[in-house]
Every structure is written in structure tokens, then in C-alpha cells.
Image (cartoon, rainbow, N blue to C red):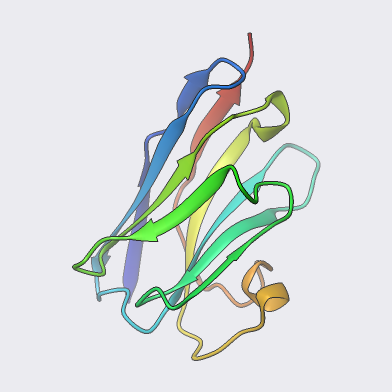
Length: 128
């Protein structure tokens, strides 16, 4: 059983950067897909980045490719999301999630369905 907690959200101006962290307690993340999702009110939850622990499969949504980077720590208990060149449309509640699935396609890894552990979310606001 895994408990997840996000941190690092906040407010930033367009073009700025933020780093989100997802810390796991309980079991380690080894053998799990970890992903970052985001959601704005009245819209579906969007998968933006996913990584298989230990880090040999990484997927990004087109909306963040080249700007966001997902990474894991060496102890397999933390997954970070480095966000650069932030835009107003990146404003959302950001969630991390874990799925104990051995293999997924890129499309599957960025959908919320396979993920059975979720954090409470952290707000990111990008505005001038």
C-alpha cells in the first residue's frame, strides 16, 4: 500500500519555473508507474508525464513536452516534476498517482484509469 503526498505548488509568472515533488510512504515505488496529472474545474483530469520506476520508460503529453521533466530519486520514494517556461494554461491542480502495472503503452500511462493511488493535489497558478 502506498500513500502519496505532493508539494511544491504555488504561484508564478509566465515563463517561470516550479518543481513539484511527490513523496511516497508505505511501500516503495519500485515496479510502479508514477504519473503527474492536472485538472481544472469542469474539465477531465489530464495526464502530463509518466515514468516507470526504475525510470526506463518516460512519457509526456504534447502540451508539456520539452518544458516539463519527470524524474525519480535513487531511493524510489520520490518523483519530481520540473516545470519550466510555465504558461497561464498550465494553471491547474496537480496530482501524482501510482499504478502497480507491469507494462503500459504511452497512451495508457497518461490516462487516470490504471492509477489506483493518488495524492491530494497541489495548486499551480501561472499569471502575471
